[in-house]
Image (cartoon, rainbow, N blue to C red; front, side, top):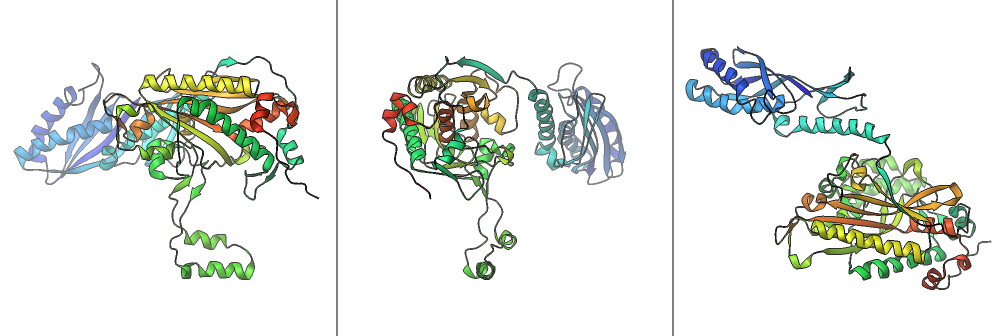
Length: 497
């Protein structure tokens, strides 16, 4: 990695009188200030400098150890002390004329409209990034964030084609497969579901709703009550502040449903909208767009982040750990674009979200206990053909990150069910150990000062239904006996003429 910076120290008076002192300072800085903290022979180096009236012009190059933009900040304070004490000259600020960073890469990256970046080029195994920055951007770590962003994009390209992000952990024995048809088609034929008015949305009739409630009761009895979880209600409108702390603000934008409040509730302000509809029977979308405010966040995307403000900035008594809570109070929403399919991939879905927190040992152990409970459900109650695999942690995927999470114990296990009608597998369940991501992000501490980790697991009812119906079909008499007992008698739904 290489950095090259050309800039100026702008001074309160001409610096010619201080030429000798500045020369001594610059020569010494190369061996001291700009090498501090770097391995021997590494760091930043002043290539050239000269005095031009009320400016000290300077050119610096560096490696990754003392980056050029950090180097110019290192120089400012001691240089100001020298000029002020001996010559009564102040430094009014730093001006950056040119700043370029070069990063090794085997391929170019797709990157457009990155803030403060004027040009990105690829040549001879390097990506060259030209930035337009000033002193305040350097102080706010903008160049380092840009470098990290480009490195993430490089890693994403390299990682995307590899298979080691999916590692099989366990696969069940063969189970009776009683269906080979797409379950969504049969659900529609039997009037158990109908398309909702919005995209990626279903209206669930009495029969499938009974199935959903049976899944919930299984999870409640065999996982939540068994392990001692308490029910909470998490918000379903999530603000930017929450997503910034949870990390989702790094990459959630293509998939969320945005929430914009009205600029005012004054009926007079909205009268022309109402009048337009009354006359035309058309909703004036363009006019409404002018009358709503900026997005304040979005509908619930990942169900656990809005829980964390409940804990934010608090110190938790040690007797409370491990924290075990769950939420089943509403829908989650993701804009799935062209990926919508049946009831298994939708924009609006129903989920039970399970969250736990404690010491790293507590959190890993809780993950293992939950995995055992799921195994019992999928093997003995639903009798599914399923498998589980270690994958890229869900939160890294959602934030556009790649690689490992820094610990072999931090990550996500995906549960996949065989889908006979398409000779493939469906991810229908997960268990994640998220490390210290959320306790750190939301500043949650323990009474004893012990490190805190957390985990989460989302039970998607549509996904469970897709997995079950794909293998067992919709005929009640073919379902496993224990599941039939839990479901009870199916309600008689609607008959359409």
